[in-house]
Image (cartoon, rainbow, N blue to C red; front, side, top):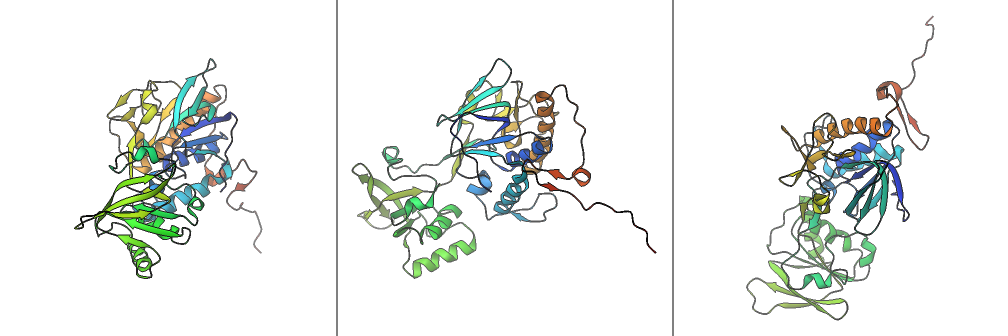
Length: 360
């Protein structure tokens, strides 16, 4: 599926903040109502924490799926919403909201991308994910000069000397991937043991055994140096007095993400324990008319932070949004088993029609 990126004002019926499973499924439910959606997410790919934190981990409580990998669930949702051609603003964080005189909203990201929408649906999961930074003095001064906390385009590292720090799935998977892209890959972890998929651990072990990567454990990156760009890292290995001086072009600490509401917390929404309070469970609208909160980002009596609950909330939110956008229209619900699914691209999925034929 191709993502739609634009520079001019983006116009949509529903602007969804958060490309996790709840946000993605909202696109499908909105599409059934012929409502156009656009999604903003601070991460560089759809899927939220399912894609970023545990794509290879199984989920057992999705209806109809006794077991499904988190990454596969995201892929399935992307395939499900494909007929409705959603737009994406990825790698940007929703920063500012301005209500217009006609009741619509303009939402602007931290990179200045403006979105004009009739309805806002905040589906930010546990919030806007921010990278956990290692405690290295002055690391902020090297950001965008060789230090990155997530990988948006692997080609950036082609024929470069790359240092990765971390001990989870992301560190393992990117070490494996970049071994065929970068000229040199070094993986550093403060422990000798890694926590990740067995297949990934075994692949990293094989890369180390064949000298295709460097592995330094237990160790920590303690310092960075360079001129205008990062070109050196200092690594302290346990049990050794002098730090290792390593020539590098890029340092990628993959220590996970911390959920925070971020700028959305200053939008005038009612907040309770880092979650957005919704006025009711009929449509999950917030205290700002036209702004909804669905999925793990919201709270109400009896709230359960489950993906399947987010799907339910997204469905009711879309029904309410339709009423706000088309107050003079009455929507007659049609089951997909009867009416099928008609996409914005002209495609239609439907069950084979019954025939009337005489049997002789």
